[in-house]
Length: 254
Ligand SMILES: [Zn+2]
Ligand SMILES: [Zn+2]
Ligand SMILES: [Zn+2]
Picture: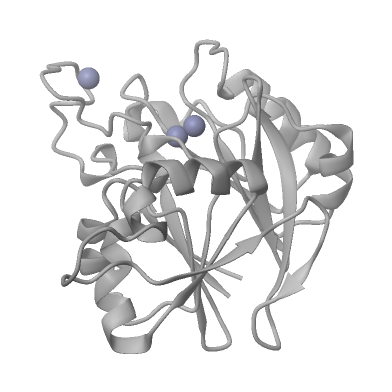
């Protein structure tokens, strides 16, 4: 299994427009963060988690050739606004399976109304095979990739995180319910939301994220959805062994 970080930045991206802080003006490529998204590849299947607002740029940078499925965590703009850019893949391979919970589908149908209620002729629309996921209801993509949708809480909003074999991707959350803790046991790799060092009402911050790491005990943890408060090199020493800041382009193999 290979997981590649396409983006690791908070909703504004880093650098943040107009900001001249130490991170936003850094020359270190690890301080340049597009909006959060990952690609997971396993036994010939390629799965994207979230069509971020930077999806087109991310797909070109990654050299994306095809996708077998898209998993959606939730419907905030930074995670979903690239959905229209799956069209070149549709032109070549037809409709694409997209997995999201019921609440996200309600929002997707409203935001992208033109996809579901076409009102004009000509021009290509995204072609989506809509699948509704339910927390704890596992499904398989191909023979060797088992996906378990699990629920986490993002402020007050329940959002989806996904376990893919013994990798898990859990972003945009402030709380992991006990039921989800059970489903995230014995992970090789955990990708976990962590905005910054200071507290935040809808995201994890370092101390809180490390409490969950302590509880879940994954073999390796990568923190994502990172704000400009965090400078990669400067702040890497502030994390314990086995936990690191993710950065755009980072590949993790398992
Ligand atoms: Zn987000
Ligand atoms: Zn800044
Ligand atoms: Zn969000």
